[in-house]
Image (cartoon, rainbow, N blue to C red; front, side, top):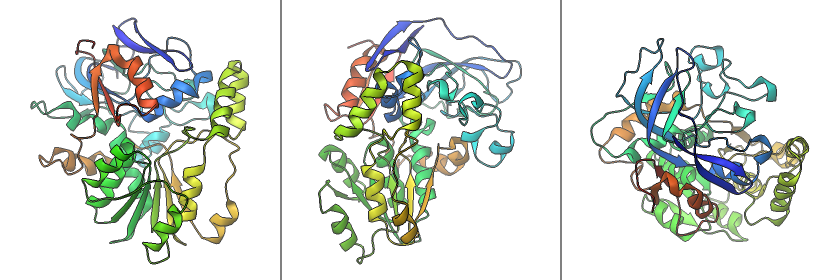
Length: 397
């Protein structure tokens, strides 16, 4: 089959690799019909190479058609149309039973002290071949895949339940906004778009900050108040919230180093070291851009909540502990527990009126063969790129 593989820092290519096969009775094989590039994939593209081997298949936002099931899989049948969550979880362990599927004790990667295994995401998360490919082996298919209607609706209606939609839903739930309160969202990439729309759908006033005009315009369609980055941003938004600040802030930016020369240099330098040294540097050094989380802490009202949906990777990143204590701020964060939120999200995704705008998020739908080019476009925010979906059945441009 053809699959997108990691070949080195800022270098990926589509190669012919062996077709996946059933390895355990609880496996399934899914033929991929759509698979997205996630902002988290850009961390692999540039920063986390020391944890990847050349030839690893990337991708963790897939959906498709079930082609084969293992003998222990009873909830799926050949021909089912499914979305595959990026968490690989068993559904029956202590953590899964408590809605913490991202901490699944059956698939935890204990060698690295990490949570549940993920598709296409480094040795730290199991080094499981990912879904930017023609076919995908799905472990624990007796629990994970989400069966959706095979009714001719576009894949984009459902695809984002694999990751970014439940990630945004969890971020807003963790934000704990009071009824009728104000939510600020930092960053209007795909997760930030959904977080802002979800907040508006739930009845909150939503203030969203994003430097890219096309992304601000996309959010504004949903009644969201949008703002460019400015040196007076915090003061401006505090003034708009009775001088207190928003009740909660969602940081959907994370460790991206774009625009920060110090963080960018640290990330590039770590990537040039031999793998073992680079891993240690990333694990013990402050290599993240912390502008967004520091802004969130400054912005949120006293007694408010900062919800982190953006990924941070450094272990020694400085945090303003005195401010956190003085303002009595609650911080909630963590890898999304996809299956926990599907029952809440499914009615909205199924609604023909598309209240969360799942059908207008994709800016680029291209063939799998075009993926290497689109990684660069997405990383550099070229061509008004917001979200890229790869179609393995589409002919290359």
